[in-house]
Length: 208
Image 1 (cartoon, rainbow, N blue to C red):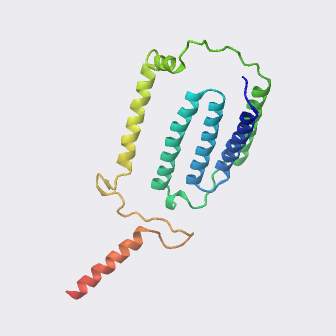
Image 2 (image 1 turned 45 degrees about the vertical axis):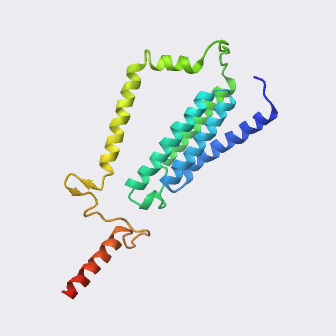
Image 3 (image 1 turned 30 degrees about the vertical axis):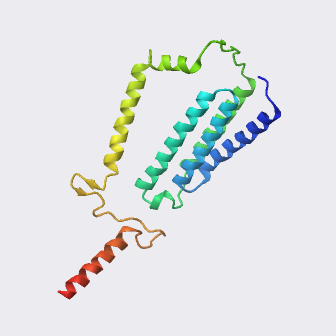
């Protein structure tokens, strides 16, 4: 493939960005920040795919990862015990095993990329890759994609039900106590509003 120096420079910059942001996923102390670091890493990989003339895969990477990482960040804000998923927390469990698995995977993939002989099969000039992919998705693999769509629909319905303020037996937030912004500190958010509401109630009772 003939390309200029600019493509090589762009590849090196994007590859560095992907690796650094991927590393930051495990070094940050916030689930929300980790989600967006991972999003940036995937976007860099998507641009590299476009540089490799795989435009469809690159654009698909943009759409899929942008939505997935944004939804993940929203999940953290809605369901994490610490406020908005921004409180410091350890992002790595079983650190020795995780480091060993990461180093081993990197070495195996690096050796494969440098030493493996990849097949060289140019695509025929008249082939339309998007149409061929559509025929594959809507042909023999139709049942697989329909099943995946049903699972995604069920997941979305479950998310709406879980995030509803009102549950089957009343208000979902009734009796819950948000954690403090600092260890051992006063609960953040809702209890202060409840306390002010109670204060207003007592004040109204005093007038009567």
